[in-house]
Image (cartoon, rainbow, N blue to C red):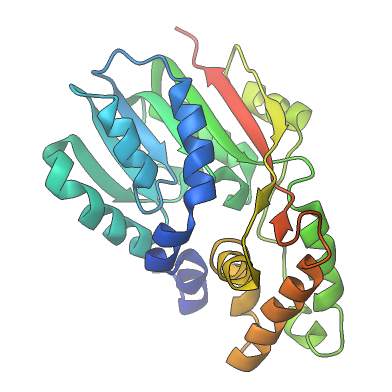
Length: 268
């Protein structure tokens, strides 16, 4: 049984994420539009979150089924509430670590967006995904990669190092893995995938005002960082300072997102 610290690290404010994750959904729809589906496949949505893109995937599978997998029980509960009434038995949800999936030779394809960069060990991740696929199966995914959020990361690192916050982050480990295209391709090939095609693309995202920027950064990006700060007032000050610096961006309140697209197949 996971200890409370591990359990807490898994969980999200799923209600807020469902409301705020429109940038992730828009990127995911672009990936989804590139899938060539028959309409009867059995697919996994790996890191399904609150199910907004799972619903889009199911719409493209009138005779198919989807298993949504996520580590967060909060996310899965919201996804169930969001999808079960419309899709019924065509969608199931499983709480699992993507590095150690409880599936073998099970799926025609795996779709994933905005999830893999939260997974610490990509060797284990891609081997786990490979095992879950049928021969001839495919992986189509997108996550953060390359210089993703480099400007924001520089500001976060500087803020964490200040006297006000440094004691909270003495043993903190960055929760993200942002591979470049070459590294991702090598990892996929090592796991057994063939016809591997990685690519990086910029996806700058702007917000209308400091409140929108702060809410997004707090919920979607800095969940793990803020868990290290025990005082709610200091957590608010941390976010407020990042928003103050973001006024200087061009355009103001923008995030320097980069997306890593991943494509690979399992040999027949």
